[in-house]
Image 1 (tube, rainbow, N blue to C red):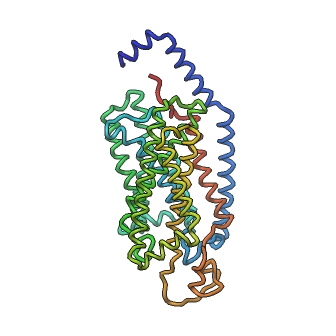
Image 2: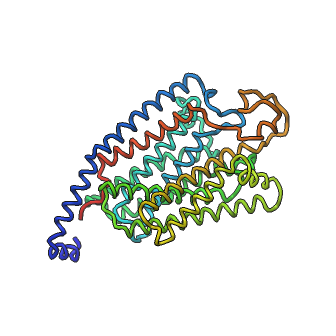
Length: 418
């Protein structure tokens, strides 16, 4: 018990009434019809996504826009994106406890649970990307531990389990059943795993020498910085929304500190991007083709949206006069959208530059655009998801929203009352 805080409450007779009113607002938020509606809408979207997925399983992956030269598409783009969202949220939650520094108010459990929901979405997107997901057991029976894909499966599964353990440890610590030392140990392990999960995801791409845009040693730290950007942005948007709904009681000072962190993370991420572009384009070799593809080619809209959106986000977060809640939410959404555009550039751009010199038979079953030569095939953006891919992806994302909304309703994610 904290004597000073108790004495202040004893002298301030309004303190118990304030706590009661805060508790009533939080309970009302949990019982809000809007939350029930959100749960219902998410559940319906999940069912629609399941129906479309079974349609994909019955008709085969030919129903998607992915082909031999574009073997990954929206599903893997979303996988990269949601791994970043999950890692960022867990890092924001675990760093204060791991380093023994001041936290950000009562947002830790909400941030961890958002990470859990995003991790489920990431795993779900990998499952729907598999042509035969019911053979997933073969990955473990015939696993190749020398493959970065297998590393990612192991780390991602460990990460999901560890996130759940970390959330449980925080809840138990509030009840006095887990010591502060044990919680700090778990938070350190969670922090290391959060960095590893995104590094390994980056190595899936960065260790492939055949794709000009992917083969860079900077990719792993760049993935981690992007995870910090979109994960922090997600936490900012969530806590402002939950505070407005009355679910959380959070001082504006904590929101401002999160905004400052977001601004700093955005600048670091843009710096990494600039370093990569300079290294690619300055020698005038094959990398110059990558820079041209991004700045003035078919991927230019994604490139410039990311650059401008993230720059605006940094200005809002680092300018005191602009740190209003509405603008901070807008800045967070711009950062999240910008990182998604980065994922599109990375994945589609890696396939956009042909790495085959020998002619071969091209038809609609091998590439998306087959009316010409190999150079013609890559003259424009060759991959765009089919409606089926959009529908399945939305269903998986809705599963993440459903998990998060159910957690808000049934789990003790609010800070414990002192």
